[in-house]
Image 1 (cartoon, rainbow, N blue to C red):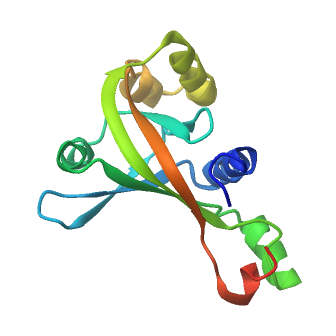
Image 2 (image 1 turned 90 degrees about the vertical axis):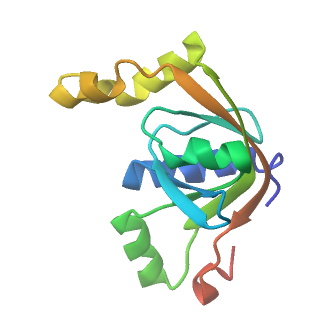
Length: 161
């Protein structure tokens, strides 16, 4: 897959992943050289090779990025129906998971458009008590720049892709 040429397909697979699990995993490298994985529910892919996430609940990730900006984002389609159909068929009709590798940029204030997109995503939960506690003051994003995409291969089940 090519990060720019296949961006539409990458976004579609990421959307399917989010629908099935409501988060992605972002791996970073700590100052001690050890890997660290953070679940992120606010990541949004934008133009080809780029994305953002609202940085509110992360603790270790910003520290790691300040020492080493390299990141890897994992999106896994965990949908039961997707897996059941694939197992019955003996193969996936689409990649079950993708890894985007790149670097994290600086944290900045979110634009009005980015906020609107975020609130559209979480609006269905606006009636809950947790909505205001978690999401009403999401205001800072971190930009991501991806340089490569890697489909996750699962033996014979992904051979035809």
